Amino acid sequence: MPKQKAGCQTIGCRVASCAYNKSGCSCDLDQIEVQPRNGCHTGEPCDESLCGSYKSR
Ligand code: SF4
Figure (cartoon, rainbow, N blue to C red):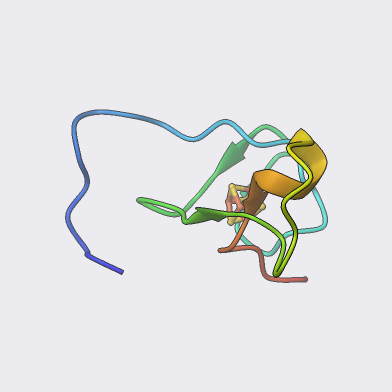
């Protein structure tokens, strides 16, 4: 994954179980990788847009 941050985006996130989550409302990483569930092509948001950078606390 490239290190450079594109633009001035910030990452809002409520996944409090992730090690990179800050106060239940944002992500501490400079960038994340959004990816679909492996082998899944349902078109459903819960399958097609998972955070691939997630790391359990
Ligand atoms: S890595 Fe993904 S799941 Fe974890 S805090 Fe950042 S955006 Fe949220």
